[in-house]
Amino acid sequence: MGRVLTKNVSQGFAREATPGVLPGSPVWLGLEPNSIPNFGNKDTKTARAPITKDRQRRKGKTVDRDSGFEIDSDLTLSQMRDLAEGVCYAALVGPDVFSPSATSGASYTVPAVSAAAAGRLLYGASSAKSLLYARGFATAGNNGLKVLGATVSSGGTAISVSGLTAEASPPTDHVVELAIAGVRGATGDIEIDANGDLISTALNFTTLGLTAGQVIWVGGSATANKFANAANTGFARVVSVASGKIELDRREQAFATDDGSGKAIDILFGQFCRNVASDHADYLEPTYHLELTSPGLGDSDETMYEYATGNYVNSMSASIPLTEKATFKCSFVGMKTTEPSASRASGASSMRQPSQTEAFGTASDIGRLRLAKLDEEGLSTDFKSLTITINNNASGEKVLGYLGNKYVNTGLLEVDVEMELLFTDADVIAAVNNDTDVGITAGVKNEDGGVFFDLPCGTLEGQDRDFRTNESVTIKSKFMSHKDPTLGTSLGLSFFPYLPA
Image (cartoon, rainbow, N blue to C red; front, top):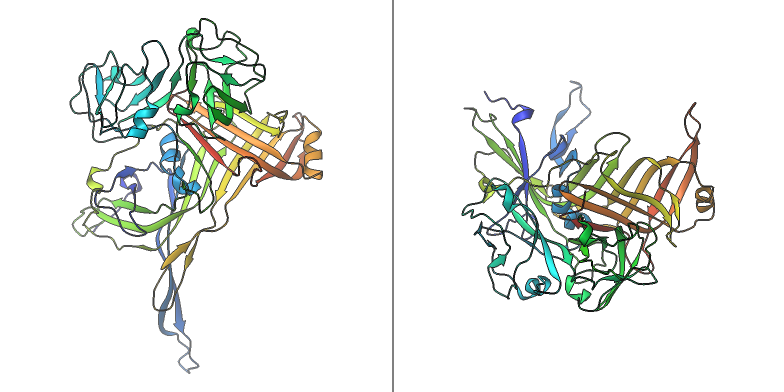
């Protein structure tokens, strides 16, 4: 008789080609949940209840079935990025992430580089060079921040970097990747103008793949790669991109004019995901196959597999509590879940585990947290707790003659934030009373890189204050994001393969 122990259970997922159907060569990625509140079918059964002197029910029928999946886990970059397109219903855009199959002493071997990707890999002997970040290799020196060493042409399979060690067969049990992490300008080329914007003469900023609303990091880790004025460092949001100028707002602090003399300035960035209209070129409705592996479930203690299919991301929440780890919850609405079987889905045996699995400490890894007016003036930066919830309002569609959800419909995107913050500014009360538009930004970073949540525009609801003895007065409020009149979005997720310590 089989017996399943929680410690032996594992989970993973793959993107589907169409709802409920895997592609010919699915890519399976592992999950690391702390708990699984829900997995599988939930049936509704209605018994017969006739008027009868024996006072007993009669066998009825299964009249409805819902399928879904939920996970609770620590917030990690892998899980956030791997599911970002399903959360936002939009494609990740911007800098590329490659899957290396080997290294030589001087290059990474990657699948043939597309023309568009080659255009985003910048190299000039005396001009700007792309920054790359490698992770997952067995040889430690093959991982970390690298500088592109030669031009990459369309169709090329070698990305040149000096100082590598030959590694013919990188690990296959976890994700190995090489991501564009930013750009290093030529010495003295990147400057900050009187408006606090980035300008250049030689570097064409439009080649970087940046999108309005995306957040970047200005300045590298070495003195030679950041502006002399320490204030000109940190997160900033892209308003617009022209060949010689990146217009910025939501800066870490006010940037001062700086000609970048003697400095080869680093600008760090990664992929970007935001919600878009359903007729936008980047709109997606990705669906997922979820696998539950149960060792010991079979009659002879063999491993059994179950698959929740046709799953849409319904909601995601990221919680940042006081003196703890940041946590992540995600729920899916699906079409059906298979019965346990000893047969495994195509490609699942080659499942790779995530590589960006460092947790975020809420005391040590907060890069930025701010409730701000739309003119960038801060209302508060002292939070006691924060939970961001993204709800797609997905729901199953029932039809006669079909048990379960034949289709899944997506609804209105709602992004809300529950927060408690120190009561330090009376303008918070005024913003609630006057329905004033405000914004929330939250950036977290650790050894794996970072993710920046940007909720560009919304209103506050509630102003409950708590007067705890011998503590600061706090105020609890709810932020409700709505469409930003300039960016046209309610949510932006900016991912960074690398950020300075």
